[in-house]
Length: 251
Image 1 (cartoon, helix red, strand yellow):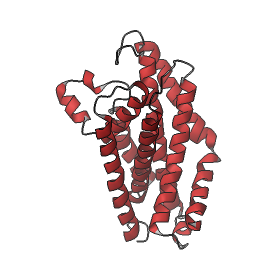
Image 2: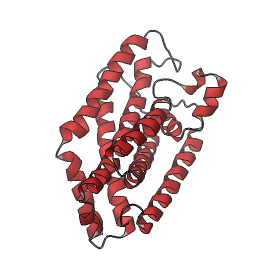
Image 3: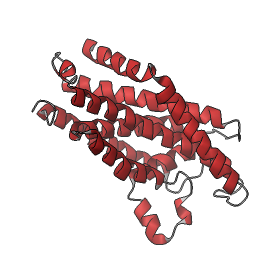
Image 4: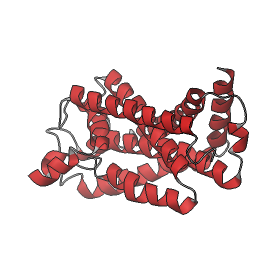
């Protein structure tokens, strides 16, 4: 546990020392999304009955920011360490694979939670949002942050250069995030695209998280929780196996 706590502390300090870039900047970006989309679509779109579009948008933006920053934290840490050669100082100490894995994932989840909470609190000045089911919000926030933390760790292990990491984020993470129902309900899409959206695991994170606020969801929240939980378990198992094999780290 000492190794886990030390590595976790190092990862927390890594993003906290540049918090203006890692915390404040994503919150500002989400606020700009809210101002632009809310101003343009507030009077034109009503996704849920009786719910203003701005209020509908806030949970989605908070979860989107949480997911993107959880991924960015673990992926950037690993790829920077590999490119600069500093990864050797993490691999040399007697850390178990589980300690290595959980330190990066927990740190990524914490950064995601901080950014997501910041987005939610800042955007509340524009619209009031009910919160009847906080435990649902906490469950999906923790699992969503964990999944993207694991994905970031996998991407960092796989990538050898910064442009490979950028490609992973631009062509996989960003499309999955923006096509997950952050700005709309999938019920407004044609039947074909509804089916495609249901293949996107990010959709279940966003939809389940939004259910905590409005009590309305595109799919059953228990189904969303099961899919998100199974995704986290499967990705975690795969990542730990990669760490155990030393893939692109010890070879």
